[in-house]
Length: 81
Image (cartoon, rainbow, N blue to C red; front, side, top):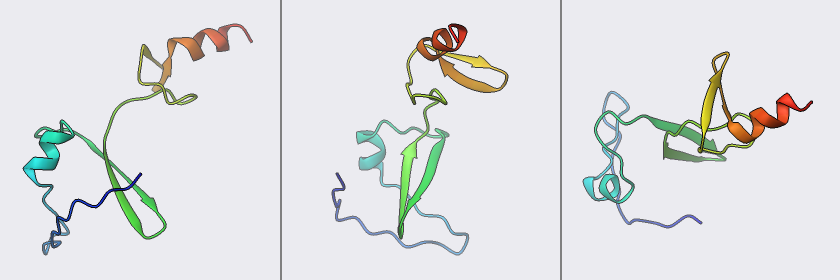
């Protein structure tokens, strides 16, 4: 569910905005952490990037197969096909 923080930032001349330290701390976002960008209607959604399974979106027990990330459960399911 969306929750307003009451924080407003302006976009600078290079298209950047600053994410306040309070939010970065709360969401465990550090310097150089990758951020994934989504859109939903007219909204822009920023989310800390985490690798996840291409099939089920799990972030646990991931393995890389031909440049794709797959969780061990889905990998086992594929082996059984």
